Length: 326
Image (tube, rainbow, N blue to C red; front, side, top):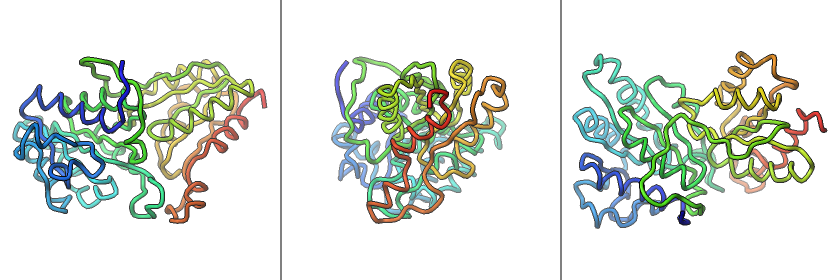
């Protein structure tokens, strides 16, 4: 095991897959000469050259379309959006081309590719640069959607995403690129669609993913100090969702709190709530609680940013609301 930054784990995944398979290439804004807007692709131009590390114009619709066409013709592009807020400019290519080409061509064409980049809030970036679209893309058949919460998962899941025969949306927290964590030495992958039980517990199940895992973990520490034994699950992937792991946990703890950064309406937490009530209703001893961002666009003021996002305090409060020990 060794300690690396989140951005370094992503870089290693791309480098290893590009060395393994010459069909893999990276394109996007500032990925080459500038070494990536967040330095994820630092040094990759020197190693792989301008034919495989490609700087694009500021034209997401255009370079996403080029990537889809390349994937349909046998290559494996990694298409980086500087932020997934900008992917809205290219969403027709993602939804109506990449996600549907396998079905529309009756399997004659595939789109083995990765759309990756940062998602969610990153401080005072205001309304147009602080949004979460995991649930938007997860709503689309034909796509897989991955949201890692730590460097080890980021590397293992990105390698799996690059090798997948389907288009994969790979969303990273902009605030976590400098986050450090331990990753295994040598070659490894993590299967898409398998959740991680980060901590076992018996009193309540907490489910989260991505950046919100950091706040969920702090909440678990506070709850433990107060005698509440929470089980913490990192979904890792929001399409497909590992419902079985969540259901097994709820059958043990009989209580569920779901934490996510997106808005509450039609969210991933809404879908999990529905599935748990459908498959494990008789095991629930309290209503399911959700902790999401507030139902408004993110303001600029720093005090509003913290009020807007799920907080450790709100998570603890939700757990206590469902806990028999409260």
